[in-house]
Image 1 (tube, chains in turn red, orange):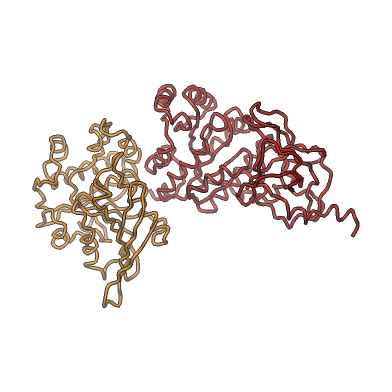
Image 2 (cartoon, rainbow over the protein chains, first blue to last red; image 1 turned 180 degrees about the horizontal axis):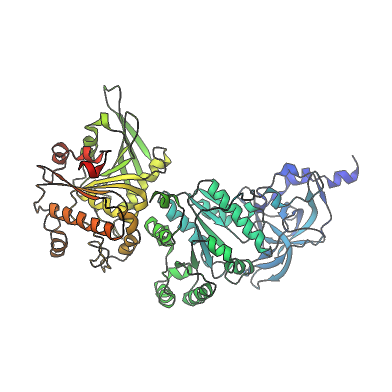
Length: 358
Length: 279
């Protein structure tokens, strides 16, 4: 065996590496070699690297669903991807052979373009190689995506949008899923866009719903900078899979704020609008509610309920309700089966098991 | 959470089984007896809710009276007084609906129930809960059987909740809106009220205030008749099949056992024929 072969054999290394959550669908046995051609790295390609310097991310979310502390010298496998996170980094899907930036704890390696003043510099990773398969092709998370839908799904979808990161979308999605689950419905909770992370995924799973998935299951480590048709195809894969798992309704979180690139594109897309039965909008205060509802109305959407941080304050809720005419629901109300099912009923979801019965 | 104990009929080759299940809802713990019939199951499961005496054994016994003809799973919740001081009405403080959902979820989890809808029966106070639960979760319920309710939540937005579906200052939550939201589905099912022809006493347990007396009548018989008339009128008004039906039990007052023995109450509930043609 030549030295080149030994150096390029990643099998031992990857078996010792910490695999990020966003790689959880990857079948490791498909990886047989690696290349140092980083110039042609595509969004989603798997990179084996070694932690050079600990920065903002002191840990990595493992594929097993547990967080692992990171130490200098640790081997890691992360997909190359872009990230959009106004409270941390904006980064692009590029790998600098001299050192790449860890853009997200759930697994996203790239190059920082902008950084929030309040966060540290990113954790740096020395790329060792781009992992390749038997045929020499780069291994990409998309290779392990759920299959493409063979026919359009018909399952009702309640979408959850918000003003920005941390406006309460994930909590709203989880609680609405929980409220509906208690009525006996088979509920799917899905994250349609964003950055692969087990935080949201686990929060959904804890509610005991029947099906949980995110865009990483559709083969995308993150959705930032991906073309809209690819994101819509990913959503359709997830909906079809939820339907195949005999779910009755999907509660689907769409990441970030209304003005974020992919979220804005989805909201403006007529096909997507036709596919969604109703929306819940999470926001922080009454002004955000007013602005958000106005923007949604402008795009032809009418939210059925407001929620999020605004709902924690009765006074802010009253203001928001008065200015928008849209009901504000607390997390407790979303969790209440009577409220949740009434919300769903108001959306006139056409093809639930219940509707068929009725 | 579900714990279960099993009681099997002694000396009976074709034995039915009665399970005891213990569940936990958001409001409080709740238990139920579940009758598993001996023979084939050919009818939908039925939830049967006791009255204010909370005597779930009496309900179990009534269904077991003709157990050889019992072809359905019967679920008899027990709303004990300590945890469920009020189980007839659904309010912000009292959520018996969550108790029923917890029982159904536990039975589903245990594989006893599938995803099917259930028939729902309640007697007296149990009938109050039965129709209010059905208004809140119409999609969960198939046939609704109400035995001698003291009073009803009418599908009338001019009356404040819980008398009707109008706004009420007495409750913070918008129950009237939640129930109005599902009213169409609620009306779209067979709704049968059973009442003794002698159930005309204004006993201590009967709600007796001016507004109820004016809008529903002075006794259970009168209230049952008016309720069925109103429901039938609403069904016709929105072009639904008129499935609201009154079954008057001859020589019966308000006693549950009398209604079962003399009036054939349980037999009527389990009737599988054409109700319109036979009653």
